[in-house]
Length: 253
Image (tube, rainbow, N blue to C red; front, side, top):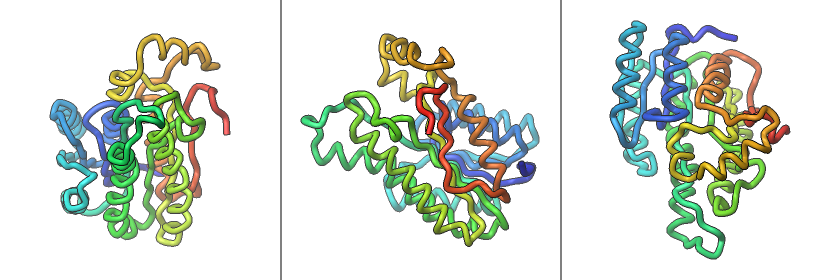
């Protein structure tokens, strides 16, 4: 496992939940971190205070990553602030709302694809030139157990995009390997304490899901952040094109 001290990381969607926990973990591991957020400054402010207490550098950048111009600009600003990039964590994503197939219109279809896939493509495309100069770099993409199993009813489009993230990760690992950039994914299961589940998952649904988890509990954001920090630290390692399933034993690839 490589040292992350002095490494430069960009984390998208770091205002809350998994993204915020990942940024915390990277700061504590020694990274300087550029924080992307879409709405809500409380999380970025907390991360800035943490960075100051650790003697690390951080800055927060607001952007709608579904907008190509905004995505290009924010990656440029993040790389300029950090003086380059060693680590990229593509965390932005969302269900939007639960809709069965009969209620899926083209506007909704495109919105979910843009949030979960277009954002990742744009940010990664712009970051590659910076990562390629790092003499060993790491990209970690956020997928989901829904991308493996199809998700609960109403999550058809979301699940499709999260399955596509897995293919995106494998294809990109092959494409970027010669540049010294490793690309991996994590696929979380039920992770409570996030905006996603606070909005889209009822207590009854969560309790039912937990009854089927071999470890007998839901995960929390730090259960996901720790493996992401590990994968980030493998900037000079031999792990690439892999998906780490983190779900308490519900799905084992």
